[in-house]
Length: 237
Image 1 (cartoon, rainbow, N blue to C red):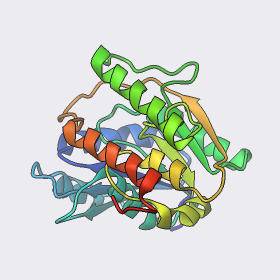
Image 2 (cartoon, rainbow, N blue to C red):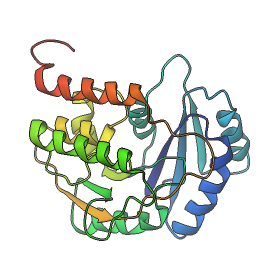
Image 3 (cartoon, rainbow, N blue to C red):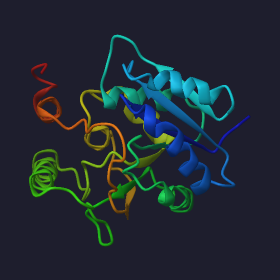
Image 4 (cartoon, rainbow, N blue to C red):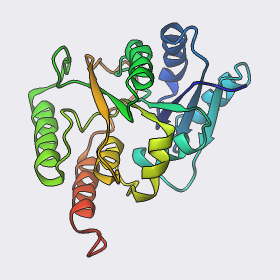
């Protein structure tokens, strides 16, 4: 069965959120031919087993279980490459991304002939929800760095919620570093041509179950991504 949209969901210890996310996607994407691909990095809480149990009852659910490698960016790449849909959305499993704007993202991609549509917390109408001041400052600082150093002209380059047209992704994928957590920034910084994109506002939700993945490793991997795009063609990071 052909599908119009693949929703790629990287996971690590998100067992309690998987079924809830599928219910929300069912409601938001009614009438849209789709599949949901969970890419799990061998979660010790049994996330992959939970996805497989759901997939036995649903033909639109798939599980890519990765062992011996981790990383949100590379998981997103593998999920998109494993799909066949002309459009692919990437979102987290923690229920903090607003699935209700997915139909609008798909419509904008199709009607305006765009490469990407980004779910943005920075454009008018977007919001960070209940983020603590320290985390909000870190996000804004990282966005400022990406704009200044990499000349990435997108308001929310730290967003992990976006939709991409397959042809554009395939032209860009071999240039990606595939490192760390910031796949959107990697795509924008790696594209061989200017990206035709639009940002759509949404409000970042609160995590219901599981733990945040934001730690010092994420910050270090972000720094490596910046360094790779600045000097990686001269000195391998």
